[in-house]
Image (spheres, rainbow, N blue to C red):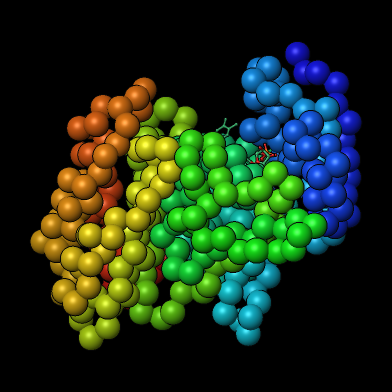
Length: 292
Ligand SMILES: Cc1cc2nc3c(=O)[nH]c(=O)nc-3n(C[C@H](O)[C@H](O)[C@H](O)COP(=O)(O)OP(=O)(O)OC[C@H]3O[C@@H](n4cnc5c(N)ncnc54)[C@H](O)[C@@H]3O)c2cc1C
């Protein structure tokens, strides 16, 4: 049973932040409500004031900014809009690919990408893609100003982020990928959400890997980068043996939590397989063998 609450409809991020300042712990922001209303209905939390961020002007914009170099996704943009947007399809198709496999069409129609990240549920599809995406950052706005936080500083713990109480996330920035860089996202889903997921970004020049980014998610409280394996790839010729060696390095360095989604060993094996698949696909996309 939901306790009574008042809905506020700010027109600017600053107005939303003023409301958060004014009502403190009694208030929270929401967008689609697909996570918040569930926990409120379960009685796990309650707020006397809900701040609807969807009434903020242009909060649902998808833009290419900074001289055509960066994709900016506003906080009101739903998963479904990302999945079907021609701008995303042209400039960041991995995001559309990831969104297509998230939850179901009802959740994707109401839920937002930013709401997913702010909730910081560990079994998240977008969190691991953002973590691996070169130069991605999250824009946080309050009455104190605007700051941009990279994903590895944003996710602190289970359901905990670096967002301050009076901040709302206003957008995510994704620098567009340079030519010669390929990306891939793989996951394994047993229950409703991913049991393990891996995102990889690989650049290949003159037959050798020049940069690699790998992120692993859903196996512990927060997603993380697999930097040892990334370093192992740079300077090497792409190929199955290399992908297997890197996947082994990611799996053996992993420290997954044993839970309903699987044991430590089971998750290590998932990470091993998903990393190899993601590296192979990202490298093939980088070399133009496969188009995204
Ligand atoms: C049945 C089901 C299946 C799902 N399966 C998956 C899955 O397979 N993979 C996956 O990754 N996710 C999954 N999800 C999660 C889904 O992605 C999220 O529910 C959705 O993205 C949350 O967005 P929202 O706009 O509804 O957030 P809300 O519920 O509105 O908000 C969630 C939290 O974020 C905060 N918040 C929201 N927007 C802002 C903002 N702009 N600034 C500051 N704080 C904000 C709210 O205060 C709240 O704490 C599933 C959810 C359901 C219900």
